[in-house]
Length: 198
Length: 294
Image (spheres, rainbow over the protein chains, first blue to last red):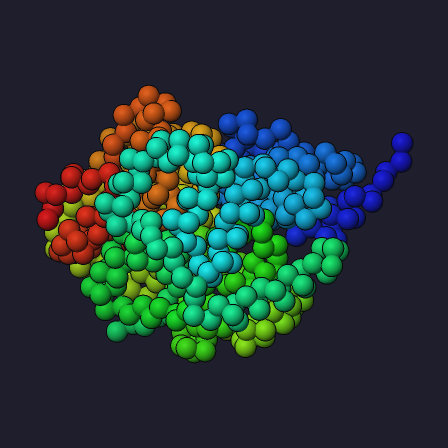
């Protein structure tokens, strides 16, 4: 059997902070430090994903839901004996899988982070919490939305009463929105060149 | 008077989920003669899950735009955040712009489209760093007029105020600054094993049951330790621990009803501020246990 480093090189070059994967010595401290690991949320730990990248398992890595289980707690970063930016490598792999069309668009964190949260902030320049929550609840249709809303109604009422939630009107755009939008358009052009899909 | 450039972040907007943090922070700063000058027309920092939609350059451009505005409006004044995720995003952006010329160049090409540029030079700080480094422990303690004697508090630092950057030279595994803040108000910081455990963060929205499992353990640990309330510096931790208690009780058959507060609320109360100054009227789980100190 020969080594095929095609996929590893692809990740080193194109996935955010991916080049650090070469430095991983497979100790497993990241695996033991991940809060989601104890809940069985993932099949492969960061350590295993990194070795899978080096083994050329492109489909298995990019279609994995494991990266999307990251809570961004940064335990793995501060504990890694080689000081690898593991959280960022995992975020990078998640983003790369999304850009390559390998991540399931319905995977809950992928869908929430990309289609709901990011779209929410670029729509006005800031997070609109009411619009965000509504869109999240109603992502699986009206019936499911009402069910979810009812389940969380006590919390929502509590937030309303505490003046920490304002359902209407949704927030308007920041004053410099045209410039903000032009900035992001250019930023995505540059990003797409790097990610190889321009 | 000490003045800073201020990035409140989306959750600290009027009528947003951390309005109680913002109100109590403003009261606290008034009492310390600190002026927080909000950046005019700031935008979202991208929070902890901006990577999925924003990749590298668009995501970092968000904080860079805020830096550019801050510099334009307030010169080299330190830029202060109160939200853990905002602070982390700003610190990350700041370090990457300083150490990666290619990233800085691209971010500036994007900024230029909006008529802005940023060449560096602004220091990004968390408000607790300002309190510790610029105000000092003695001054903070000297402000106490109504010590919160007998109040047992679980100091919950959480993740992003602590990792990967850290505060006050503390360790990542057992940081001390929050317990010191609790103790200076006259309250007792209980030993708390879940001090730096993760609440699930933004995954409370997408993986609710798993996040509730994490949150349940954090609350359980505080309750088992005899805490009257939980105190945190982070708006995501506060929200997840307080607002989801009903959901947690429903999922796990628990009966939690423990107030979850910000360090700023404890300080304001112990310094003689009113219930409303401390934004204690803006809690979802009512902090009745604090009423004896008003």
